Each structure stands twice: as structure tokens, then as C-alpha cells.
Length: 380
Image 1 (cartoon, rainbow, N blue to C red):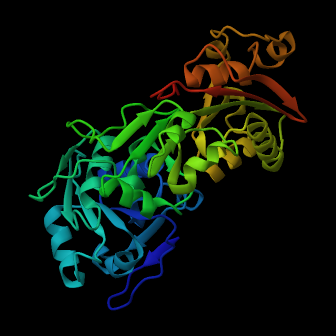
Image 2 (spheres, rainbow, N blue to C red; image 1 turned 45 degrees about the vertical axis):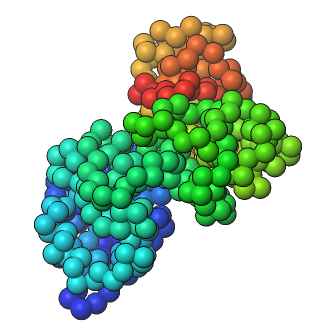
């Protein structure tokens, strides 16, 4: 989609996420594309002259003419704007549309080298300070916060774990749980899977935040609110924690897959959903899909990965054969040069020796499932 910007007209945009990323330079576009891939809940906009050819598949919107004419559409639509544009240019462009710090979106600016992420506007009420910290954490940049009253160092519920790619299951309880955090009521945090370095401040956690290893322990403590991070589908008893709680999905599931040539995306997706349901795992926690190099052009696999935004990773037979297998296959070796596909691919990417599901055959598809350890980054 290319947006033709015209003076005096508010352009039509497709708003899907809570945040908009905008870039207008070559280096900025590369940074923005990477950020869009790793920071959930964002829509990406950049100038059409930097088109890569995959914009439609990735839901990226491009525009022609001055970025200034795009702001009137972005301003009321998004909770926050992440702009890879010079600070001076941003100030000049947004000045005519500023209204009130209670209603203006949070605005953060990133320099073209990705060294600094600056909270520019609506630091507290618009969430720009927390957004700047989260984006800086993803980029390995320096967050620049200038508000003198920036003293409440606690958990931003709507951005919790965003730097790691965590997604909340539902936004229904974001507001009441945020209120519990801000009002220093007793809040339980349970991180069953995903990154452990989630505390983002250099000061101790406030006494109102209590960390538990399990949901049952958290329930026994009777907290006012809860933040639960897990790839699992909760049991009916565990769901009581969500009466005033937010459920987050960390990216920890690796799907190792093989399939017959020409297998449809529908069949592949059906096997994935069926398998995850059997394991009682959430599809939102899938980190990547891995396979053998021979399948790097398999349309069904590519289509499923594109639909869900999963990295599509493949390995050579030599790489796969370095992995110790529970079920090596001479037949598979005869046709592919590897003693297995789904099993070693999942182990390689996840960096583990044991799988949750070693190998399951269903129709034209073979699937293995791995769980990444805490803080795992994968090995593409």
C-alpha cells in the first residue's frame, strides 16, 4: 500500500497496532524494519523509494511526499509514535497539531545510527518515557528521559516484556492491573517461561511487587493484580489469577518441520494448531519455524510463516547431522542427506538437547516442538 500524501488532506491509513514506526532515510528504514519484526503491536511506515518488495506481505505501508502530511492521520490513531527522524524536524512537524498532554500520543525519536532513543512528548501520561526505555532495550541504545518527575520506577503493564517480543493475550485487564501497580497494591508476577531479566530499572523492585515461581503460589498470596508470563494454556483452576490479571505470551516455542513437496499452507497450519492444542501451548508463543535448506522455497511453509510473522529458518544437511537424534532415519537421509529434519532443526534453533515433542507425522507433515530456555535467542 502506497499512501499519496496531499497538502490539506488527511490520508487514509490502515491502523492495526497501538504504535507507529516511521522512517525516512535508508539507514532508518533498515532499523525500522528490524524493530517492526521484534517489537509487537506496531505498524510501520516509510518512504516508497526504499521499497524492498515484501511490504504488502508484512503489512508495511509506504508513502510519497513530505512526512509532515502523514502526521494528522497518525496523531489521533496511535498511542505512541516511534520516529527515526531528526529531533528538530519532528518538533517542527508536530508543532501545529499539538493539543494537550492528556490526549497527545507519546512521541519518541531515534537517531539515524540507533544510538539514542529520546522521549520527546507526553512522557508520563502518553507513556513516552516507558516506550523510550523499551525501544532502547531492543536496539541496545541509550534511553534519553528528561522529565524531572520521572520517579515511579515500576512495571509498565501495557509494555511489559515488549522488548523481548512478549504479547499480551487480551487487553481487557490492562487498565485495572495498571491501576493496581500504580497504586502500589499487592501485585504478583509469575514468569514461567521467557526472559528473566525483565526488571528494567537499576533500583530494587518496589515492595508491592511480589515474584512467584508458580501460579498456584501466586493465587495463595491473594494479590490485587497479577502479571503472568507463560507459553501454556492455563487450567480452569489457574485461570482465577486472571480475574484481575494480564497473561503474556513469551516467544519460546520452536517448530521443527518437514513436509512433502507442494503441501498446502492450510494443511501445515492445521497440523501446527492441532499439535499445539495437544500440548496445551499457545500459538502466540511460537518463536520460529525451522526446517532443512531443501525446503527454503516451500510455498506452504513460507505462507504460514508470513501469516504469523514467524522467522523462517533453514539448515544444511551437514548442520542437521551435527545434532544427536532420538529417531534417525536412513530413509530421510537417502532423500535429503540428513538423518532427520524436524527434530534436529528444532534442537538447533532452540539450542536444546531435549524436545517437548520428538517427532509427529500427520498426513504430509512432520513436526517436532522445542522449548527455548530462559532468555534463549535462537541460533539461526
